[in-house]
Length: 180
Image (tube, rainbow, N blue to C red; front, side):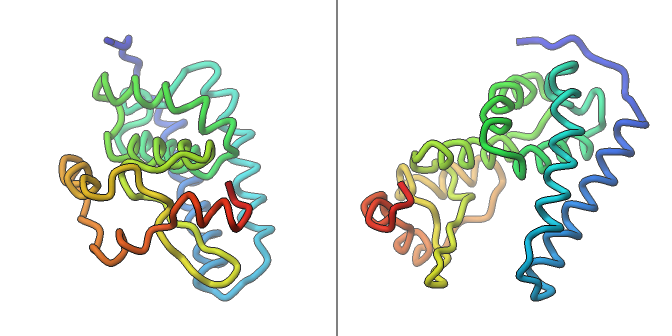
């Protein structure tokens, strides 16, 4: 697939970078700052979805040609933190952008794992964790635990620790907890 190249939009790039920073700040305040009220994170996510949805309808994936490499990555992060329906809609758009060299394969791996988890499927790249109310934070089930680090290496990702892989949630455990 060869996408028509678009001209870089510096205003869109700047807005994506502001939103990327705001997203990170809200999540750091929630996770690191001891806040237990997710309302700031939810407000940022809702605002970002309202911003992104019409742009993606109009332009497709906001790739590096339109937003720069860091802007395309920022677009991925905002989509990653969007509702499941928007993530699913964006997955083929991001895949096409990666094929055209306008987005990063690593970002696609994260979105593939997240969308798969949204649909109760095991993940390929080991990018998604699930924290249960009992305080256990473990990897979402893995499609092929023995091959996960090979797939990660192809994308330049650090390997997962074998203990983390061994402790990944199983689909059976998630069904027993009512999460699948």
